[in-house]
Every structure is written in C-alpha cells, then in structure tokens.
Length: 105
Image (tube, rainbow, N blue to C red; front, top):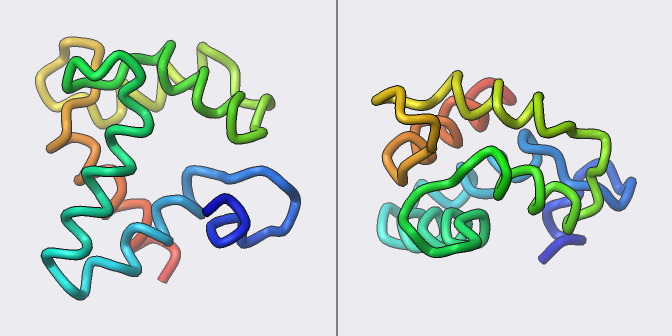
C-alpha cells in the first residue's frame, strides 16, 4: 500500500498523497467510504473513534515522514476540528481528506 500511495517515490507519504489516493476511490461511494474508514482506523491508533495530534504524529513517523513535528500535527488537527475538542472525528477526517484531494485537481 505504501508504494501505491507514495506518488513522489521518496519513501514518505504526505497527507496530500494519502488524500489523493482516498479521494480517487470516492467515485464509487461504497468503495470510497470503506477505504476512508480503513484509513481513519489506521490513524486512530487507540481505536477510540477520534485522532489526536499524538496519534497523527506517530503515524507520520511510522510511514516515514519524520519531518512533521507534533506542533505541526496540533495545527493540522485544529484546522479540521469541527467541534473544537482537539481531536479529529471521522466526519472531520472525511472533510479534510476530500478538501486535500480536491486541491490536487
């Protein structure tokens, strides 16, 4: 999966590359919805239904993007956090991925 998503071929997956991959499947609503949920669950390390800045930071490290700091993750979360609780729920995540994917087009 990592090689499929790593459009830059640099061994790192940016949020934009991930969003493009997920947005590319959204033409088939059911398939896109399932893939979006799977990607969300990949980021939701403790499976509590929300993504924290710490989880986002850990995942970026796991997928090879260690350039992203925890502070940057906090800022990313804040930009899409619809209810201001400091976390990204599934609806927030979907909006973020759709916005990132559409900005590449």
